[in-house]
Image (tube, rainbow, N blue to C red; front, top):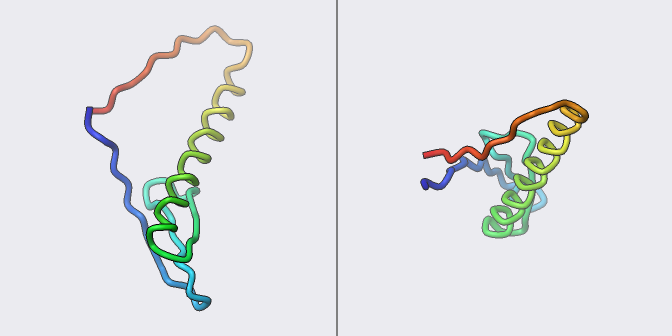
Length: 74
């Protein structure tokens, strides 16, 4: 299976921190003292966004008969 790739948009703020956002998932925003720290924080932010969106979607379907299937993106 191919890995999904995302694009980080990174700026250096006036206070010296790096601030970033994932272009494809704009809700995923983070900062870090270094670019490496920012990248790890963006990965964590992405996971939080995905978890939150998953919970919200399941709430919409609560009490309904649904079929769930895993998708493998190739």
